[in-house]
Every structure is written in C-alpha cells, then in structure tokens.
Image 1 (cartoon, rainbow, N blue to C red):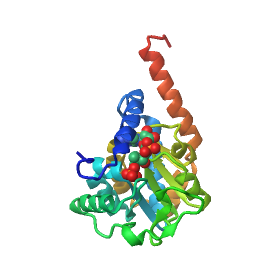
Image 2: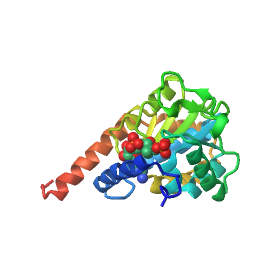
Image 3: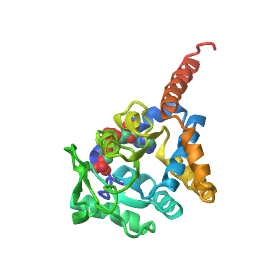
Length: 234
Ligand code: PTJ
C-alpha cells in the first residue's frame, strides 16, 4: 500500500522482507536486550542538544503516527532522508507525516542543502538545520555507510535494525535489534517515563550501556532460539 502511494521505494519491499526474516529468528517479540537499547536510546535523545529522527519511506509507511508522537514527547525534529530520493517521494512522505500530525518536517526539497562528507549516495543530502548540526540522530531501517559517516562527524547514532550484522547496526552508538513497529511505541512510553529524570540520572543510565554486549547478546539469542527449535537439548 505504501508503495502504491509512492511512500515506499520498490526496493523497500525487499528491505522489509530482509527485516521479516530476522524477526522470525527473534520470535517476533521484543527481547530483554532490546529493552536496554530502547532505554539507552531514549536517554540519548533526552540528553541531546539537538536530536533528529531521520525517516525513510519504509519507516513512514509502517508507523507515521508513532514517529510524530516520539517527536512530540521527546522534542526531537523529524527529517526526511532517502536513498531513492525524488521530489514525488519527498512530497508523498511529507503528506503522510502531515496527515499524522507533523509540522515543520526537515529535509524536504532545497532545504536538504548540506552534505555529509565522504558519502556518495543521496543519503548524503541533509538539512543544515537538522541532521547536519544534530548531536544525536535516530536512524531506523537502513543498512549503509551513512551511520559510520555520522559517527565520524562526532554524532551519536541510534539505529533500529532487525539484522544485528548490518553495517548500520554494527557501526551505531546504540543499536536496537527489534522491529520498528514495536520499538517506536516502546520509545514513546519510555520517553514519557524518563522525561522527568534529571540530567545525572539519564547520563548514569547511558554510561552503563554497552552496545557491543547487546549486539553479541542478540546473535546468541538468535542462535539459541534456532538450537531449541531444531530440537537440540540445553
Ligand atoms: O525510502 P528510501 O528511499 O530511503 O529507501 C529505504 C530502503 C529501506 C529501501 C533502503 O534504506 C534499503 O534498501 O535498506 P536496506 O539496505 O535493506 O536496510 C534496511 C534494514 O532494515 C535491513 O537491515 C533490514 O533488516 C532492516 N529492517 C527491515 N524492516 C525492518 C527492519 N528493521 C526493523 N524493523 C523493520 N520492520
């Protein structure tokens, strides 16, 4: 349906299938280790001087209202950043976000005039008032070299990717290995809970977070689940 509306790129359907395959390995529910990353991600957003939620076609097709709600409760801006950028898709995605209650969406048309150094794809084009100056960027559903480039610019990157082995998942500062349709509602709830925490409390939670441990746990979790499903005894 999202593709019929020009929101999702044709390759987005393949990307969705890639995600689904990993969701079966997770058991289609949020595991304990992902809750840790969700909490760390919310702390990073609340501590940020400027946080931006970077959205592509798949994210907006799957959960436009939740993106807008997370922006509202956390104060983070929304910016459209596309691999398959075209004027038609920018406008279709903007329309979808607006009808879900968004206003002031960044990264549309000429406003995506800044460039992330060292990146060749259309994802390099960002808003000088958004991702370019942000200290924290939320990057769901993308596998590529942008995360590494953003980290090289000194930014904290929070990724959402069901595949813990993707380049984005591996290079992010905080990787949430879970389905975006479960992650966003959980982040909205956590933000409401954490919004009254002090700077020290949030920093303390964030300091205790170890992304490598979470990535390793996610692989062990999937491997253990396959072992159990294949009938192997503990
Ligand atoms: O809208 P555009 O033009 O920016 O294009 C977006 C797509 C998604 C087509 C483009 O970014 C792409 O091809 O993405 P990749 O390289 O397939 O990366 C998408 C990643 O998201 C993969 O690692 C998938 O495992 C993961 N993924 C897919 N669906 C979900 C997901 N992760 C979490 N939740 C999902 N529902």
